[in-house]
Image 1: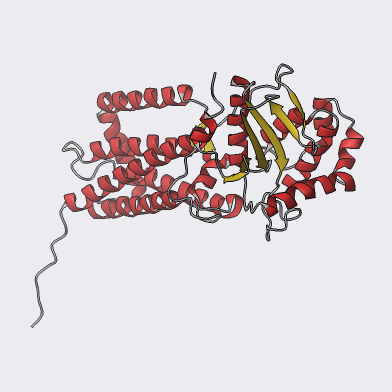
Image 2: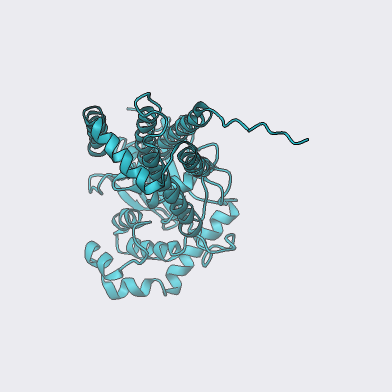
Length: 389
């Protein structure tokens, strides 16, 4: 005997609330990523929980130029996007919508979210070479939202997607006073965020000043800051390393504030596989040549100007125009071009690299203070020892 009972469809709430929960989850993830993005650029000691390896590293993704879209961090766009989606869901779940209105609009929004997730995943794979765990979670949320929006449309709509879209637009027109008021308020808030959001990712290294002493150590390494320092910091840096750029900017600011207390000595340690023997695969390609250019500039008394210029260019351009560098710093362009081939300059770079290898430095930035090596960052209490009036 066959069972003739029909399977009763699930009620609207079983579809609606999971969709709302997914949108809220996406919003929470975007808020976390926005905070993390800010701290990566502004907090000296910050390291996110998912900075696990070179391949799985949220900080690497945040540090890439692809984390900024139209002058706003990508996760901030996520916050705005999920907020807009929640507003749409609020209306779609109202009695006026009668369970079957606005779901085509929600579907198109979620389709956009899903498509952009695919684009971001491809950027992480092919351009950044690193993945962010929280970003991957948001991609999953977006695909789940797309699935739920499609299911709800199929379950509660009696016509096709295109016809449903026309009906939804007509519904918005009928409720235009409420719809336009909500849309206008959202656009005003989004516009204010876009206009006034702080551009904290554009580091402003204090301009080089002749009022701050500079010189060369007895071993021929450039220094800037105090002639009789309370705190002497030797940095091992890579011009393609974001953390090096961040820390160097902070150190230069400290030198500008405490020129009689702090001295920074620069040594090159490019993590370029063509120059550094501990790097076994392509990484920070070009940083070795940039180091050679800085060594030449040091021989002409222009190291700190070149240093600032190279850090400002890192990540913004794939090719360095030697002629433009020479013109900017009033150097001989032919000599600067030959610097990358000079055996003498290459030997000086290799001395820095070998010395760093001997100290056990496995990555950049690294700092030597009173004979002790600090990898990645300098403890706050050590920095404070040089910040005395």
